[in-house]
Length: 278
Length: 294
Image (cartoon, rainbow over all chains, first blue to last red; front, side):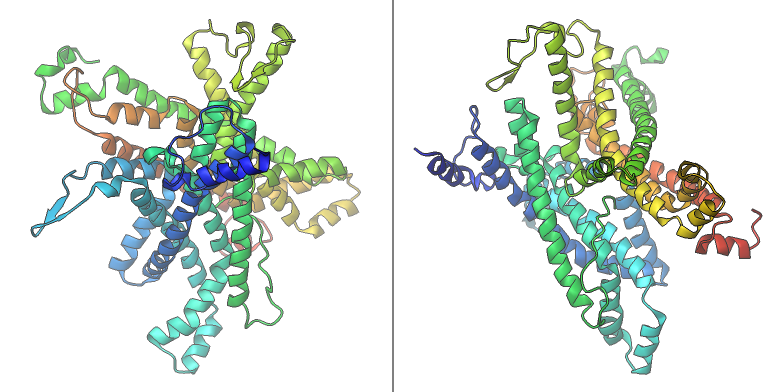
């Protein structure tokens, strides 16, 4: 069999391995480059799954938190501040461990509320438990970004809204929120990149990889362990992440253009200053 | 530790808890907090120095040096830091052993034999005969190097930005006084840049604190390792049997980190006020108007 045909066969066997489709057993010896690229790429499905869903859910939650933190009402502001402090002040790694060890304590036979039995076993699985932690974590970081942007909404915009007789929800939806998003967007792009990078921690932090179905770094470290050679598997995983980062920058750049489209000549493209730290 | 702890089975309540929390393994657990602080104390200055060299290289007039500085900062960008933490220690370990094997072993024997990385016993690092603490220290040293490389790249970016942010006019004034480029760097650029670098560096410090539990991934017996060990269910064969208490141990770690970041934030706020004094910036001007003595 030619090398190309062999590689196609490998992709068919292992391309969806990380979600349990294809070969049951991982290769054990004589790893080809094609196998390594395929397996690690297959793991990226999990990174995308965690990243996309946590980003979407975290975005909604972060908006609520940012508004709560900016609220003059104490009973709204204090909980939001506390939430943000806890999730920004502690390592994500510890949050994963804590969440996992708390979730496995849930009664195995399920919670019974009003005679209904809610199964709880799934909460300790990575796809649910880790997603929950990632969502809360990114919500806290994004809320801080949105809160900062909210405080920087120009006074003139608000006065103009008053002059047009816009109040309450209409004022928020049509003036405050779009401006807040526009101001927050570059920082939020960074947060999104960090979130995708943080998804690599999931399978190293207590959450077990069910039937060896893990993310890209899980497979990369599996391969590096088996081959005693870190110089192939880790660079492949790094390459995938650089590609993913470039895609994210492009995608967020498109949104940024849309957010800024009413400003002639200003910020036509997102000047991405890769802030490697959040 | 206490005399009454001789037979834990007879104890109850607070006495049991005090004996439990002062058992030998718990003392190791408390000592591992020292490992974390040691890592912080070593990594912060090393990566600051690396970042400083990187930033100077990135500003250098000599092109290859400039490329080196910029590449170093750019390589870390876009790649999750966990990959570096997994990659650097193994790569470094193999690099050292490979070099030693060229010296101490028969060089005609290849190091890579199929899927194996084999060096002769004399080239092992540390030597197989070395005592346990040498292995522990070697592990921590590799971790320090890995952390320093990653955070050095972050610091390069921050310091490079801060050096660029020093107002051009201040450097031109120094030139007008006839200072040499080296004098300008030493007397104007470097003292002035700290106030611009502080926000970035303080962010970096926070990230460094929050990256320390990743030591666990490097196989160091750190606080995460002990929290998992001690918290797991202990059957009656142990001196202090208990159920699954991991959640309490991790809660303690969470509180530890919250305290660390909270204290750091307060210290940074004070430092930032100190560095803003007399600066021609918004913060410095606000302090001048408020009449804070310089």
